[in-house]
Image 1 (cartoon, one colour):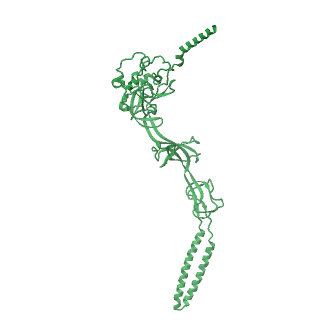
Image 2: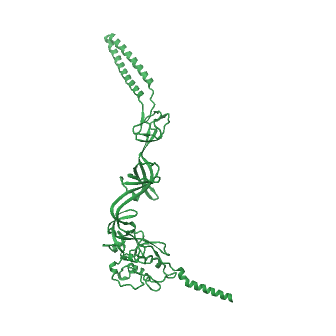
Length: 485
C-alpha cells in the first residue's frame, strides 16, 4: 500500500509541475528587435561602374612571313631580341645566275662578230645584193639589243638580295626557321614579333550592363598577381555579338592600357568601367528607397528637419483599398486607454463604411474578444491560439517614438550604384532617413522591415500589415507591394 501511495503522490506532483510549468516552458519568447538604423542625406560624388574579368594580352602581335619561295639564310635575330620597325629579320640566299650570264655574254659576242662581217660584206656587195645583206644586219642588231637587255637584268638579279624586315617594333617571341637557314615557301611563318608597350584585357559584360558601356570610357584594371599596381585603361571596343552563357548573353569588351613593370600577358585581370559619374549630388543608401508603383519614397526619422513631406496617395500606392490616414487625421483621435498598443491606428486603413474586408482582416478577434494589437501588455497565449497573430507583429513595439514620428517623403531619384542612389528632389542635405532593420523572434528567424510594424511598412500612412493582418505592406526588396490577409 505504501508503494502505491508513493506512486500516486509522485504522479500528482508531476501533473502539478506540468500544469503550472507548461506556459513558462512553451510560451512565446518576446521578439528581439534590432535598434533603429538611420542614415543621413549626404552630398558627394557618385560613380556607377560595370565590372568584368579577363586576361592580359598584347594589342599588337605580328607574324612575319616569307615573301617568295627560296632559300633563306640564317636569321639575324633570335627569340627575345628587341627590334625596330623596318629592321632586317632574315634574307634569302642569292640565286646563282653566273652560268646564264656567261651564256648571254657569249651570244652577244658572236652577234657582234656577225655584225662586223655583214657590214664588210655590205660594202663589197653589188647593189642587188646589198638589199638582202641590209635585212640580215638589222636582224642581228635587234637580237643583240634583246640579249644586252637580258644580260643587264640577270646581272641585277644576281646582285640583288631579297630581305625580310620587321613590320612593327617589339620583341621577337618566336623564330620558326632553322639557325642555319632553310628553303621556304611563300607565306611560311619566319618570326613572331609582339609589341608589349600597349596591353589589353578582354572582359565579359552581361547584356543588362553592356548597353551602358561606350568606347572611350575610363576603366580601372586590377591584376590578381600585382594588386599594388594602379592601372588606368580605356574602353577600346565592344563586341557586336554576344555569347550565351547560362541563359544570359555575354559581350566581349576590350580595355587597353599602357604596360607597366611586372605585367605579363596571360595574367588574370578584373576591370571596373566607370559608366556614369555624378559630382556633388545628394545621395542616400539605396536600401532606404522604397517603391509604390511609379513613386519612390523614404521614411524620415523623427529628428529629421523635414519641411515638405508627402503622404502616399491611393493612386501612388497602386491600391485604392489600402489608402493610409495622414498624420493630421491621427491627431483628431481620442486618447487610447492605457494598455492599448501605441500607434495601433497608424496600422489601420480608412475604409468606406468601415466594413471593407481588408479592415476586418486587420482586426482579428482573440478568444477573449479583444482586438489583436490592442493588448500590448497581455500575457503570452498558450500553444494553439492564432499563430498568425504572433507572426504578424514582429517589431511592433520597437522604437515606437522614432517610427511613429517618421513620415513618408516622396523623392525623385537619379543615378545609382550598389551602395548609394542620387536624390534629385524631395530631400535636403542632413535629413535623416530610416533604413530597414532585422527583427528576430522564435516564430520567424529574421524579418527585414521598417520599425513600427510589419515587414517594411510605413507607420505614417501606408499600413505595415503583418502576416495575419490586412492592408498593404512593402516587401523587403522594395520593388512591389503585397496585400495581407
